[in-house]
Length: 236
Ligand SMILES: [Zn+2]
Image (cartoon, rainbow, N blue to C red; front, side, top):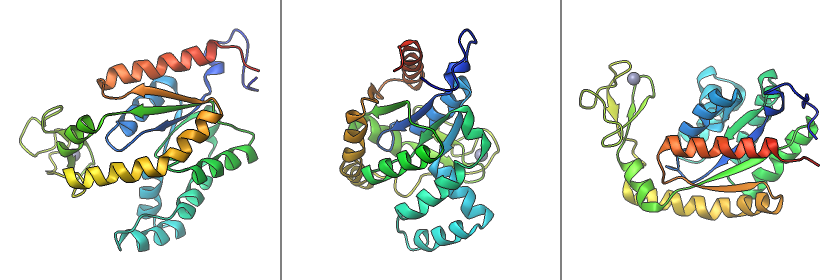
């Protein structure tokens, strides 16, 4: 039973805490943003938190830059510290969708500890399962605006003018790591890293797998369907 449940008040029981897992190109970021709006949850993205810390020049941001400037991944410990700070903010209390974290079992365990200290727990973990050909098609065609960060796709969502952002007129570019060879490598690393976290949530009976080769709208509707089912099911 969740403390926030108020019988008969619609939406009161919807303060869910959801994790979106899935390989790069599965659509986590896009889905999380739309879902957060539809379900009135706070979107927590470790990518955004990292960028904010860096742009605000926080102590943690400065430490992160040292790794990023060498082309290294920002270590677990640093990401966890930033995330812990994020959980101090009041908007987390309205429920949240977490995307980009945890990447491995150690992070999954740490997350449970952070939440436990704040009397919270994860309700549902959705694994966005996309196949390699679909991921490669999505990522190799991806175009990013250098000015506003908007994302386009050469085939799936082409800009109106070639290589120019529809939103702000900025120039579009392709990320250096969105090449077939690099993508295959990123996928292999992801599978290896994430296997433990996936098992961890399977054991907790919180994991739901969804076919993420489908159109974004279908995937989002399927996730919403899962949350409705969850809220309708009896809680112990
Ligand atoms: Zn733009």
